[in-house]
Image (tube, rainbow, N blue to C red; front, side, top):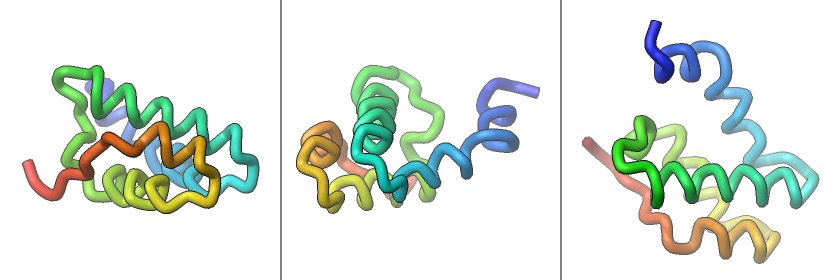
Length: 80
């Protein structure tokens, strides 16, 4: 099993659920991970993933400004 499949099977949905965590620092950490994945990874495996992009959209509307700042320059993708 490749790394992407392992992540999807065992971790992805739990990770994406963090977008709704009540602790701002947890959401900020997630936003930083997303920023790295979208902006730094040359071949980010989940750039076109619908659930990941939904999480980015939610973070762009987060009540915490620090979360919004981290993802402000990420353009959510719709297809591969």
